[in-house]
Length: 238
Image 1: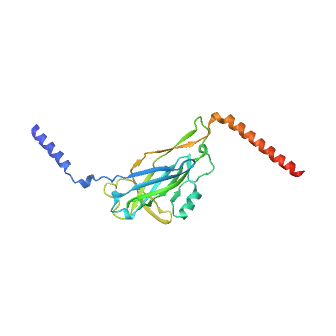
Image 2: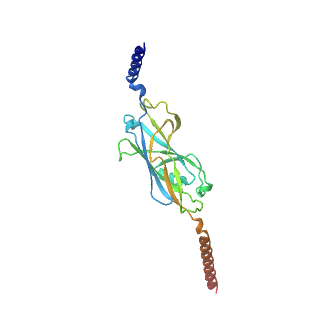
């Protein structure tokens, strides 16, 4: 009897091993590469991805990222509008932004960044370049502050044979097909591998131990300049 049970167990294991592979098809893996260009307070966020795993559908695909911009950074709506007119980048801000607010008074921004096909890199590649700016931070004991930019959500819409088998269990949301398109598309939220997982930016800040020196020099320069202006006015009046 135990031998029959052992044979039956082996048969079940063999049946599981040879079952229809289409039933276990997994969603194709995607790698998204991100980097920050330039230094200082004005930089460029570059995002690239290769959809070679969707090669059969890629000609009809659209891609956009749902970005969460932390309070230490901001996107300038006026600059984005100018760049959009020249077809450089397509970004739709979902939240208002105070351009003058320092980091400790600002709030997080949400934005949709529509990626463009990038045939110069590869036939299946999409990319986006978004100008990003750092806010002024409170003085610190250290000369730099860290800002962490998390990975965005990836959304894909294709017109044919989409989603592939294995991707149908991922969530779908409705959003504009593009900035210049009034229609609404069904976007599939897909997981991906981010390289790197997070981006950490270093921002120069004032140092608290320099407070006395900075205040003294500022007041002295102000008084000297005011005196020079008063002296010039007095001479010209006479």
